[in-house]
Image 1: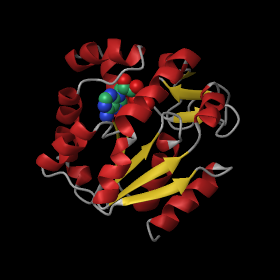
Image 2: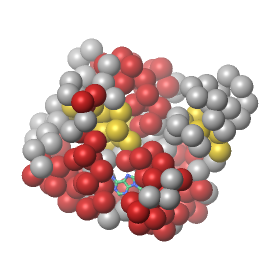
Image 3: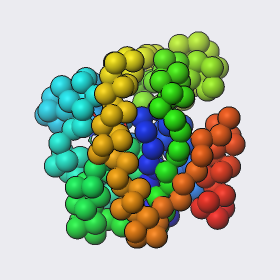
Image 4: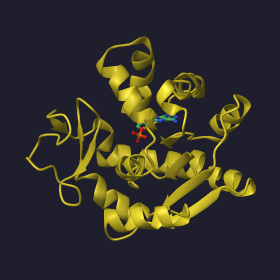
Amino acid sequence: MKLILLGAPGAGKGTQADILCKELDIPTISTGNILRAAIKNGTPTGMKAKAFMDEGKLVPDDVIIGIITERVAEEDCKNGYILDGVPRTIAQAEALEKAGIVFDDVVSIEISDEVIMERMSGRRVCEHCGASYHLVAVPPKQEGICDKCGGKLVQRRDDAPETVKARLEVYHKETEPLKAFYAQRGLLRSVENQPTVEETSQAILHVLGR
Ligand code: AMP
């Protein structure tokens, strides 16, 4: 199964991708996580991406398409994958189609900007493996420590309120039009954010017919 998770920053794409990849036994590809790792490792891609990310802007499409075409060609992607946070623009969606990368379903997680602004202040990520937590909704077993790898949990630089506002603006302008793009192709499944992570996962599995 080849799946795209669409939704605003903070909609819970990363958290849902973590659950779905276990349920569906396919890997998640998160361009945000790949770019953060590249910045941490000081690679040329990371150096290119950092200034854009710090300001809440989108990284240029060619960088993103390069990352994805390489990643989906890897062995663990042969039975499918979940894209988290990509495509983010119509140009990226068209470039993926052109590269022969097609999808079975596109799930859009629907949530208001107000709820996102509240939610982002509690988000923490593992600086080592990129796993996502929330102080209230998805707390780690041990405070400040990643359950999966023991890495340190930190707040993302781009989760500062002003940057979240900028990212939401970018989402509405650049990414939201993808809903119509995939609706035209008969692939769009919209899911309302639910009160709990588990209920949202159930709603997603339901629209996927699982
Ligand atoms: P995310 O972790 O998905 O919220 O992404 C964090 C930041 O990484 C975004 O605000 C962008 O600066 C950059 N980024 C991640 N994925 C993409 C993408 N598909 N296109 C452009 N920029 C991206």
